Length: 270
Image 1 (cartoon, rainbow, N blue to C red):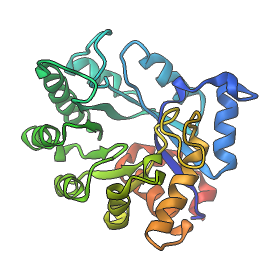
Image 2: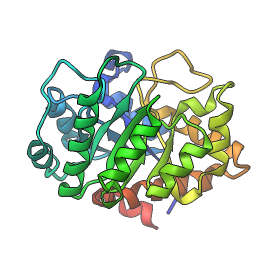
Image 3: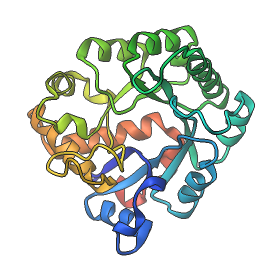
């Protein structure tokens, strides 16, 4: 298999499509031109789920998820059954993003924890892995993952930004660690150490675009094409080749999101 990359977490529906000559198709073409052959478009609210799903239906290089971001408070909060039903479509390969965020939300956050538990139950019922958002809530996030038996579904700690101790705990539950453009930031010293130590067979790469563009594009709109910059940084930190990082993280993606194996082109298997 020739080396290529997968952007394991992006929000194609939220890109500024006018920034590309051919709109969303132009963003996907830019990704392909940079060796990113597959993208997972992640849902964060129920109202926009049809848009996310339809992007995956339109573009064979894209898959999608269904879930409600922990900070979403305005829209509809689906039931377990509704999440499971939505996840039954073949282009939906994961439940999430879900999790806990104590940075942006204040007050009694039991509603966040209850929503998180519903997503975990739905993932186990749907037999789809979880995409976990965790910000300033690592203790509760990991505790709930353990309590709800999330290892049965498996999943990924997306846009990981904690230290090695927290990474080890997530790995012990059986979750993958996904690194975003944050790892390229000069002051992200603890995260750079995580990038060096995560077992290669548990590592994913992502952009979380349109947010968190990597150096040297920090502060600009992020896009899936920049996945390459994340992988190059990790390769340098690990004193590894770019090709090794690309091959491993792409294979890890398809190991986790098993229904996405249908998206591997025959030419990529040669």
